Amino acid sequence: MRKAGLILAMLGLSVSLSRAQTFTLKSKDLGGQATIKQVFNGFGCKGENISPQLSWENAPAQTKSFVVTVYDPDAPTGSGWWHWLVFDIPANVNELKSGAGDILKNLIPQGAVQSKTDFGSYGYGGPCPPEGDDFHRYVFTIHALKVEKLGLDKNANPALVGFYLKQNTIAKASVIAYYKR
Image (cartoon, rainbow, N blue to C red; front, side, top):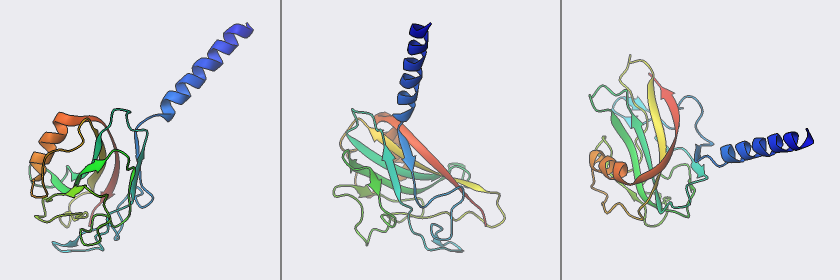
């Protein structure tokens, strides 16, 4: 009987350890809804347009780089809306600081690239759904890649970045913030 109890305890420990190793994305700045701090400043929105702090842990051992994306699948475009794309983030990095999406602040890791968003600009563009729409989902995702570089430059459009992501992602984790106006 003691042997069976020991085996069950070991199995429980094994299960809890495997859960503890889940690739996870977190943010000190995001809750369930985006705030005026993250909201875009333009297109009729009057936010501060500050990208949130993001951190991640337990990436797969074979990770060679990361990509951060922010996507609104509810945008009334037929193809969603890309709000932020940062790629070629070195594998030894596990955080982007608040405000890193402002290309003038130079807060992203050396070698990382912020490409064009669907706003037509570089860097972070916060939530800005049409007035009267229901809540939009803003999906912040960290992608762990099997390559060090995507081989793209800052002028790569979101669809092209997405294509390369699909080919090279080995794991990903997301958090969602909601916003409406």
